Length: 579
Image 1 (cartoon, helix red, strand yellow):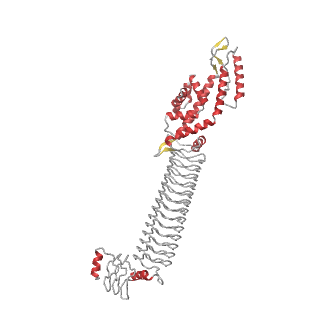
Image 2 (cartoon, rainbow, N blue to C red; image 1 turned 30 degrees about the vertical axis):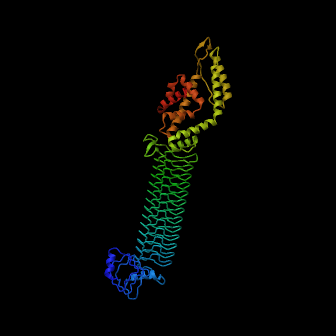
């Protein structure tokens, strides 16, 4: 072919000239990027000054007269004759097409391989220390056990590259494509992989100590048992990544996305997760002692049996979080959202620091409700400890929370049914005996008989509780010739009993309503009445009703705190006419 014809066809887009006859052609200084000269005869041809970046020189024919720049002459030798006896240290092979070449064990230290096509190249055990591979194509290449310390792989393509046991210490691999690459047991300590694409990359058991991975995408990557101690992964994406048993001690993970990631048994001592997203993440049995999770989203995360002692969880979102057996000893939970927290009696809340928390997202339903009120030291732990002692169940399905509690209460009542019935019979018998006094000759006689009855009843039922201990003077109503008429009231006996019954029931109702406010502040009046009714034994309810019938409603108003007056009276009145 003539030079003019070649250049014209190249200009209009032709790149494949394989098998053509270029003998004695003069195309010096021409732009021939990515041209395919495979099996082209270049005998006597002049290509000096021509740009042959990406050119395919495989099986190209040259002779002693063919003019090629030194760089492209070296490329031709490597492609067609191999690298034996060639010194490639600090050599310039930038832009060369070395696709599929065997460069195993070759010394390319400080070589310029920028934008070089090294796809499918065998670089096993090669030396690439301080080499420049900026924008190079290494897709599918074999870099196993290669020495790449301080090499620059910025913007390079290492997709599906075999980098097992490769040394990338202090290497720069920014904005690189590493999808599907294998870095198993590789040394990437102090390396910089910021902004790189590492989706589905295998970094298991690799050493990334003090590595920088800012804004890197490691979605679905395998980092199990990987050393990421003191690494910087700020704003990185690790959705569904596997970090089980990884070492992230003192790592920086601020604003990281770990949605549905697996961090089970990971070491996170003093790690920083400020404003991190850990929705649905698995941190079971993880060591998070002194880690900082402030303002992080841990919604639906699994923290089962994890160690969060002395961790900072202030302003964090812990909605629907599983914390069965989790250790929060001395952890900070001020401002955290604990909506539908899943905990049990093994959840450790010793010495938790919490001035207030929220029961709903977006800082809604603050506890304590008043903005200028805060929990005193130990109050949070005390409140939750009481709840755990009473219910000891996992808090699920917030919308139907009371159904689960009702079932638990029913079981408790059934277990104690015989005991309750026995106490009820004893109390009823005692009251009947007191009311059955039919005649007395004097107030001294009355006092003697009442004390005798009471002493006998106490002796018989002291193990049952709920006995009447009367003292002081007694007044008698409805007397006729010194005898008390049937249905008469004995002042100081029944009136004092009524007051005490009302005082006890008022306090118990208030305690139950306070407990309910903590668990479900939006409970309706019907739900409140159901909860309190199931929690208080029948005999106590009957006594409260009896006391209320005797005209003690005003006393009840005095006994109940202001927020609970109406609901408290409504509950007792509801016991008079049960459905």
